[in-house]
Length: 438
Image (tube, rainbow, N blue to C red; front, side, top):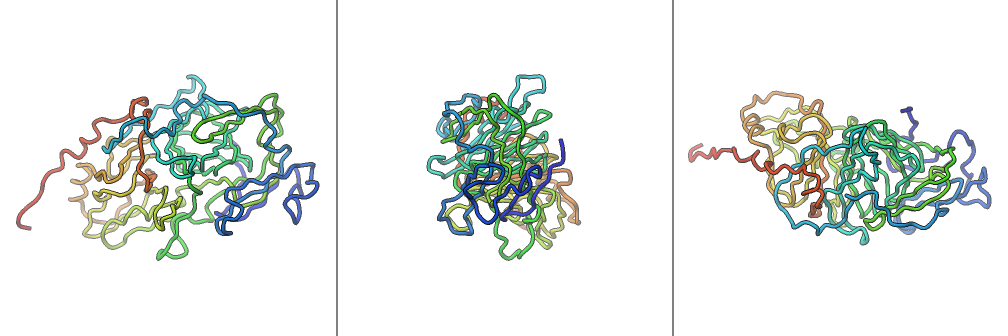
């Protein structure tokens, strides 16, 4: 895949035009009587017109044809395991762990990114614009004559196996394992690939992802704004006899036909954009004295709720770092949480559970369900010599954490056949070490 160009920064106002059409951006106004090159002006709004300036996001697109030029949308049945039905399974408070999900092989039936969407869990209602869903994508074929957009919310995509070549209305980007990307609500995109791919998606209905406040950390640290990358303008010059536009709307899929590519945007300007981020650039903040810090210090992006300090969803990583705490049990502590924690492993072996939790798999620890290190991790860390050491080298684990109580779908419980019924056993050998005298 070719090396694409990017604009850098998070939350800024960008301007871009395809280099094949210089001066294609109108000067000094958004909607002139006649746009350069005979283009159409179209605004894509990601917030209400009257939203505060700090939260107001929109982008002006200058394209060959307006997005409205398509046939009526009809139901689309290509993604059979995409679901927002949170009532199809009875509630289950147990710790859950999934073995790696199966990818379709290169010689198996062609499965595109959209066709390979599988919902594991979620909560809320896309119609009320409140909630989230967690999906797994499993695919082996490119979207060559189709594009997809999500009317329900933002997609945060976490590749685990295989590189995604993502074409968006605003330009092109490649997203490889240990990178992430965000496709905001309504932006049309297609995923092309060269090998079978697997990964995770966090979908939020409420608002948009933003950088967490740093508070006492100060001006710098965690994910720095300068490290986020947005694609530059690019338009598809191919001709099509039939192009399909797939829409996710109120949890269901629909498809419309048109005779041109949706990727016909020659120039654009605005602050409502897709972007990618390399997780290896995360600036880790950690304790240098004693005790294990809360995992919130590893938050990359957050989607805030209306309650201050409480998120609809946080995207948290556990990257390579130094561990130097004194007089401390260094791995994650045992705890019960008022949040829901869905974890995935991109590569390597997670420090608190080196056995059983494999790359391409997942865990879910629901609200107030106890969890923590397995017996081997506890025994080893309780007796280890506490010297400075590197941990998690060659590893990248992540967590989707939410203030909502997540329900697991039928695919997640039964159909995928990856739920590990023996997960609970990893804590059963923990011993009662209580002594009346210390």
